[in-house]
Length: 222
Image (cartoon, rainbow, N blue to C red; front, side):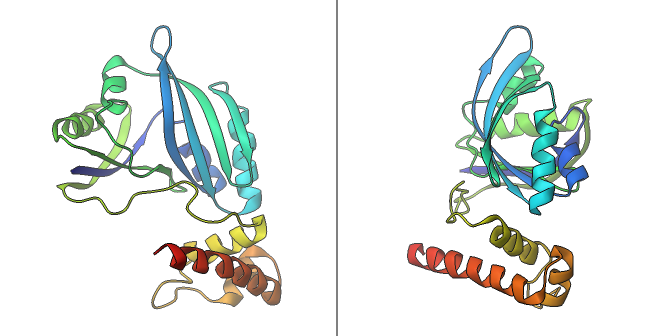
């Protein structure tokens, strides 16, 4: 199967200005779309939000204030959205081509960029998507990360992990984002404690409780 990954920044994006402002990442997985009158396209998606609890809440509040966001419903760090966007017919045909397979979410990151990972049985739809992204007047930056014919073994599942309480989830992602699980480690518990604003004992408890749920869950399914 043909696989395409790229990063881009473009004008008019609903999500990335807010993810950059709030310092979070929004893993957006398209669920469906409908063409409305004119150039309007109604899009439904699921969002898995990564970041501190307060930053996630600030991001959700900001999204709800946007006129293009018709509905936003969820709790914790998982939300469903229904938004309306204006899109040129050529863009619509390339981005929402039924030949495309969204094997991973669109990552709207804290640096203001989107990362796409899509696949297709045929090369041509992916080539059209690359050409459109490079030539579009609204695309300010484009970086091709991968364009290859390979077996895909890194598929995303929205509900891969068990549900965690907010503080446990925050501690786990804070540790991951700051390189606590890297080798060699890029941070330690003292630094993470200061970032989260809790005592070392409290942070360790949140992290260990999260790990005690995540690790057995993964190993039982591996």
